[in-house]
Structure formats: structure tokens, C-alpha cells
Image: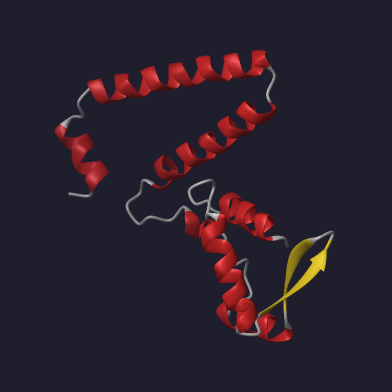
Length: 140
């Protein structure tokens, strides 16, 4: 992958919650290359990074059960609020795509929808939970 593809892949795998900057990714890729875990090759005047045999071994050592290393770990929070954490990030990513590539009509419709969601969230907050609902939500 190119460095930019690594950045994009991390953003996708984290459902938009983490988009590392080029200033953090490229030095990290260089360190991994220095450690012999990656190799960088020039392709179309850009660096393409690939795992070396040693890098693949290190990757496999981290994945002892040979499962996908990026399942829902990004969503797991232990507090039962995973969806409430993940959904806004996903929506933010979709909103960015609409800003970049959406037609004026699509952008207008999306903004109206988000305004409705915002009002709905305020309405939920305005209705204070009953004592039982609050205890269920916090585990107390």
C-alpha cells in the first residue's frame, strides 16, 4: 500500500474514529522498514510498502487464532455503548463523502436529515430517564 492507503485503511477499520496524520504514519512506516518488517519500493514516483517475510511472521505471531485482526475490537468498549460510539464516526465519514462527492441536492437532504437527528437527540436528553432506566444504563 501507499502511505495514504494505510491512513485510509486505518480510518475505515476504525469506522472513522481514527485517521492518523501523514506526520505519524510515514515515520512509523520508516521505522518498520528499518526493522526489516516492511520494504518500500518506488512505483509511479510513490513509495509502496509491503510486508517482508519477517513482517509476515510478526503479523502472524500477533494473530494467534488466525482470525481477522480487525473485527469489532474497534467497537468494543466494555460499557455497552459501542454503537453510540461507533455510529457518529461512521456518519461523519459518510458526511465527508457527501461533502466531497455529493450533488447539491444530496448535500441539502443530508443536512436536513442530520438536523432532524440532532433535534431527536436533544429530545431524548430533555426527557430525563427514570431511576430504573438510569440504573440499567450505567450498570449500577
